[in-house]
Image 1 (tube, chains in turn brown, orange):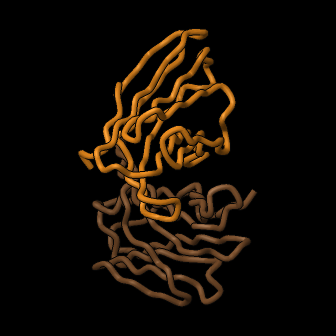
Image 2 (image 1 turned 120 degrees about the horizontal axis):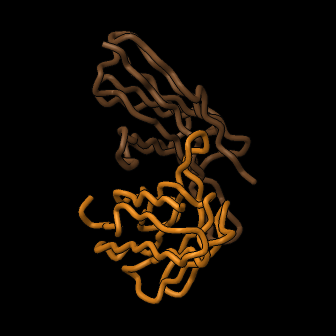
Length: 114
Length: 112
């Protein structure tokens, strides 16, 4: 089936270092969404990218959508301990059954050491 | 996200027993989803529903049953629980198939 691959699976950084997670799809995406799940919590929506080449920023977080709309990245500048958690991308693809389907990547778990 | 609630939050059961996990949303969202989350597997879709009385299988539907008689409720039933169904289960809802999904707090299920 249509899958969204996300790398790395785990990342351990020192506080203040940068962090990037990448998401790749074999098919063109209608949009891509990013979610964050804190330890013991539930996934929470962060942002949605729709346009080819789109870049959005939220404070220290920068989200990019590739020109071909098949890949995306989340970059965190100068990580803080509050950034700890698992970051999921979710790619929206055309689905023959219901029109669209949102396929989640397996997530990147970020650990930040003070 | 008080608009979507799951119950119970924690459940311990025995192999072979029937278990029902409840999900209720107050937003009148058309779509509802059930995921299971296991270490190393991320979020795997079990079943989803596009509207009341419309349900469809996801990636890992075996051993699970769903129903959606009302828009706001989407219960998930394990008809005969197995140890491999020990997991954290998340319910989510959205306006449409391509829209933002709002997740419940999750149910942690242990099958002994």
